[in-house]
Image (cartoon, rainbow, N blue to C red):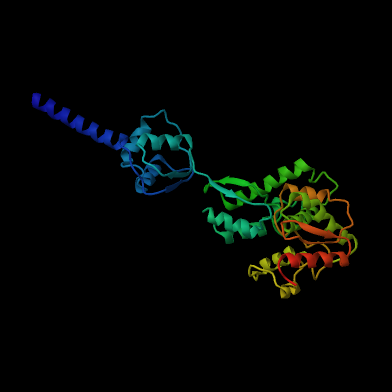
Length: 330
């Protein structure tokens, strides 16, 4: 009888030791292990995924630990395991939903193609898929811009936190929602007397033409003055965008490119292009809504991050000559 009791004690101690080792000895997962747990996964499935990823030692120990808890729900999401942790630590992270977010920064003036690349670089989906969504999900903005050809202009520049449990459609919708919030703040919405698409299109050109915030209202005035006088806008960024749409842009603009046949080519086609050529920020939107009152019709770089403005072609040509001198050209 004593021998049986001793044997049982040894077994209990062995099992207890095994459980303690499985539960409380930290596990070092493979470098930067990422695990995506989808909504609806059972505890058995979650345990299996964790074991397969090398985050825990035992599926059974994880399920037993869960059975002994007050039944908190395990949260779906993407989890990043970068350092050693015990089974309870892993369990608590999933129970409280300590999910991993991909941070994506969209600078002002990014096109939908630039954004698509940023999304792909962040591991959130393919660039081609995002471009397809931007080109087809125009219902997201149809109340403000019923003639929108794409979501270009309405994917608001910002820093976003996304998780891979979100679809690319949901991420695009988040950017459009941010545009709506900013538009509401500055009075650019369906309740105003402004043509939203026209303002956003102008703002996108302004955004691409100058990085100096104080110049934006003046640049906007140049283009509005040109529209008033029925002059071609001659905006280089619109030509670049025309080639991006065709997939022919080579990274720099040449004189021959100015002949590209596209309604976005403001050298060949008068008036504003048929839609935005980039995604403007708040400052450019405000400049397009409230341009300076000026008689300027031309501007050219001064070589120092700003521009020289002119009222006449003669004055403009002098500014161009000055700019060429700064570049060491004749």
